[in-house]
Each structure stands twice: as C-alpha cells, then as structure tokens.
Image 1 (tube, helix red, strand yellow):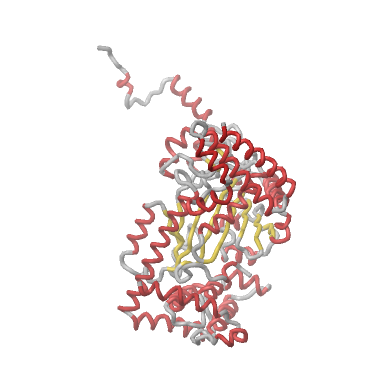
Image 2: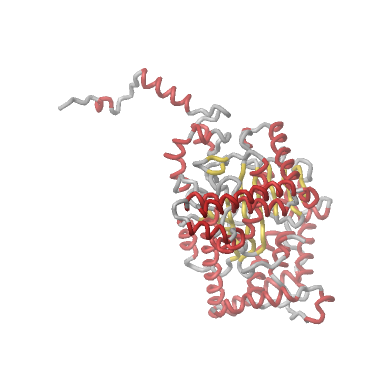
Length: 162
Length: 374
C-alpha cells in the first residue's frame, strides 16, 4: 500500500511557488495572441475579439462555454461556400442536376462507389456554381466551370466502366 | 413596393418572416475591438465585394452610412426593423445596404462585421433563407470569411457561432395570448430550444399581442434542421391560435365583437392617436379582419399602418420637426384614411376606381374560413 499525502493540502490557502507560476503561465497562455483578448475578458463580456480567439480558447469553449450555451459543440451546418440542402428540394435537385449516366455509373460499380459519390458531389456543387454564374452574368467564370464539369463527367464515365 | 405590402402565407396569424446570417472577415478584429479607421477599411471591402459580385447590386440597392442620415431616418430604420437598435447606437461606423423593396438588409458593423437579413411577408422561411444564403455565398467566394472546421462560421458572441443563423417569425396571437395555458406553452417552447420575444429584439415586452419566435441553437443543428423545426413550431402555434379564436368567437362573441368594433370606431374617428394606443387597436383590427368582419380591408394594409406610423417614420416623411401632438394627429389621419370602406364588400367591377386589390381580399377569406372550421 502506498501512502498518499496529497489530500493534506486540501483547504489550504498556501500556494506553492510552482503552482503560482503554473497559474501565471496559464493566464498568459489564455490570452489571444492576435487581439489580446483574455479568457477573463471573455467571461465578463461574452464576446470574443477576433477569429483567432476560437483557436486560443478552443478547449475552454468545448468544455465550459458551449455546453451551457448551445447544448452541443459539434458543427453540422453547411461547408464554406456550399449551399445548404433542404430535404424537400433534394429529390428535385438530383433529377435535374445529375445526368442519368452518372446514376448508372454509380449503381454499376460497387467497389469505387465511395469515390464516385465524392466526384458526384463535387460535380453537383460545380453545376450549382455554374447556374449562379449564369444568373449573375459572369460568363468567364461560367465557361471555366463548364469545362471543369465536362472533365468531371468524362472521369465519371470512365470510373463507371472500369 | 415594400415587401410588407404583400399578403403572405398564413397572413391571418403570421406577420412576417426574417432570416439573419452572421459573418465576419477573418483578418479583422471583431467590431467591438475594431478601431474606426480599420472598420471603414473592412466595410469598404465588403461593399466592394458585393459590387463586383453583382453589377446590378449597385443600382438596385441603397447604401447608407448611418453617420450621414438624420436622426428621424435612423429611428425609422429601427422602427421598421430594417436595422437593429445595436447598430443604431454604433452610428459612427455602422452602415446598411438596403434592397429597393427593403426585403434585404445587409448590416455592417453591428456585433459582427456582416449581418445579412432577409424579410418576407407571412410564413416563408425557406424562401427567405435562400435569399440570405445567396448573398452569404457571394461573400464567401470573394472574401476570406472567418470559418473554423470545428465551430463553423465564427461570430463575436458564441451564441451565434456555427451556422450564424437566426430564423425568426413574427406572430400575432391575440386569442392564444389571452388564454390561460399560454405561459406554459411559451416555457415549453423555450425549453425546446426556441426564443420568444417582443417585436423589437431583446429588450421590449410583447406589444399588441405580437410575438417573435426564433431558433436559439447554431451548433449541433444544420440550417435546414433549424428552419424546419421552427416552421413546425410556428405551424403548431398558428393552429392553436386559430382554435383559440374559434373558441373566443363561439363562447364570447358579444364581447369579442364589441372590442373589435370599438377599435374600428376609434380608428375611423379619432383625431389624436399615440403609437402605443395604435398598436393595441391594430391588434384588435387584425383579429377582426381575420374573422371576416372587414371585407374591405386586408392584413397587409394594417401591417403597413403599423410599419409607417412610428415616430421616426412620421418625422422622416414630414422632413421637419413635429410636436408629439402633431405626430398623434398625423397618425390618426393615417388610420382614418385606412378605415374608409373597411366595412364594405368590395365591388369586383369597381376595383379600379376604389383602389382596392380585390384578389387579395378573396384569397384572404379563403385562407381563414376553412381553418376556422377545423
């Protein structure tokens, strides 16, 4: 049986120089290097100073702040630059924007299905971008997107066959 | 034509839908730490990006530096819920970009660098979301916006981090709001992750039986999930409100009619009306129109009166200083003019001369009657 004296320190006001140093270090560490916001300032004001704060205070956010505010700290929203999909317009979208050959290619090959799915998703996002480019009359961008889409479609057909 | 002059879905209960997306630019400090010079540079970058993204934007939108406009104009923007009170207080650096019909407002320099707002009459969450998202996507493409793999879109306050989405619906609940179980219903809603507030944001109390219901969570729930959950909650409230109205009509018809026609009497005859008195009377009139007592009136016209009779808007329209009494007089005159012909069934052949849009009125009645029978 080993003896443990740690509990003797409990309730003791005295702090060892090491622990003070550690605390000081922690306080320093909890200061955003980009904007100088401290964790203490955040707790008082409820606001961060810059985007970098989210990296600086990531662990406190996940452990202390977000569980209280949000009930979850997992982001499940849309990816940067990719439109959000509503369940109700999903069916319509697929019939319109994915060529039938792609569907067939995907269903034919089981081994490369995951890869094909990824390519298909990229293709969809490209087609959406193309639509938007046409709407805002940005024809240079549209032409570029069109060429890229053709390349993807060729890839998909090849992938489906092999 | 302003967005609120249109009659939206479920107009008998739902006044308006609003979507707000919060975004920040990565390499600038958030507005609370941003000094005015940097702020100017930052917001110039945003307007520049919007102009290059869409050449039409320049012609179809109006941009206001809040420092340049008069105080009544500023107040009018707050009253019509185009900008928030928070932005109005940051007048030195704040800006707003408004679309012609005022359905889109891009607020620069509030709590976050960019807040995109899309407004629609009635319950149209998905449509309003699409409008706001289109602008967010344009900006995401052209500017380095603050985005984190784990946290999503970064905002000044972590209550908005993630989707940055606040979807809210303004409801008129005169029957449900007076019923006994309503407080419990509200606390149930709050527990299921919705916020319920008075019409002008966080500070005021429900006024004229208007309630704003919005999603509260921006993490752990995707944009589509948040919007669908809110839509379900709102449709539930709409159904309950219609039931409560029917109950009120069946059980207390005399006192209900008394209240509605007293409101009509005051609005059609009064010479002075304060804005708080007016909002109560408009509430009674909205209920009267929904129950079909005023065939010559539609909800959209009451919404317009509510939107355009605030102190700031009256002063902004007048262009000169008016005393409180003069403002009350102008307000009463607006109400009297609106009440003309409210009781009359519009004659379909005379719709041009009467200046009433009869198709609106017919669809309004179609909307309310089958629901009341449920």
